[in-house]
Image 1 (cartoon, one colour):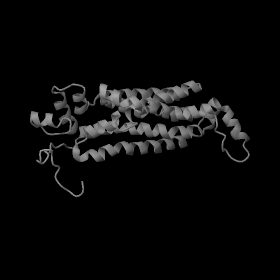
Image 2 (image 1 turned 90 degrees about the vertical axis):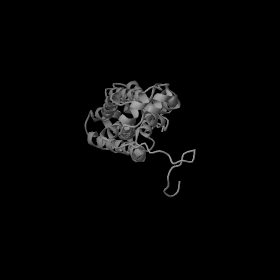
Image 3 (image 1 turned 120 degrees about the vertical axis):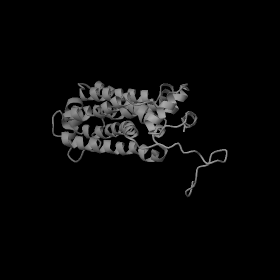
Image 4 (image 1 turned 45 degrees about the vertical axis):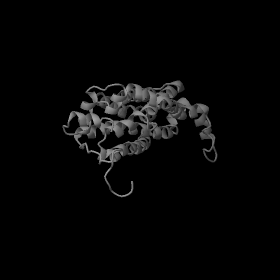
Length: 267
């Protein structure tokens, strides 16, 4: 809508303002949810650097390392290993598959439970890839990370974007939902800095891959203390007082009448 004007409801009357403050509870809720972007960004950025570390290639892809050593001009077309490609792309394939059913599962079990599941998948994937002793463990770990990405982050119907949009107060919604993109960029930057710092350590690739579990702990433990969104509760048939109690606590809204809170539960 161009210009500044009052939002008008369907009956021609100005829409009511139900308030909402940027309290510590609101900020913590949104930061925990947005940390899913940090994991996503880290997982995107980490594989490129790890796949060029000599100790990593020597252990899992020695033929690629041998080609690099024998190259007289450059490394072009030396990374044509199907196994190495599977290691890199397995996260994206798993994320694609998970995103196809993410909206239905999120609708059925709620945003908060999906965030818990995503945190567990992220942690398991980081632990398995960091402790990998063969290519199968690497691919399985990356697939678990991909499933976590697909369910929590991959599209606008997944848990994290929905959770941020539904929990943020109206006047802060744009800023807080943009936090997901900010954390995604921070995750990519962090991954590259970690790869740079660990490239000369013989076991540095384990540290790079395993650190994906660190932000997963944040989102998992944080989600334990988060309340689900009123919209999710109503969609799952919770039409009792749960949505009315959930919204003011999460959004920092001051006490309002019972009818007003019910009216704005899906807003």
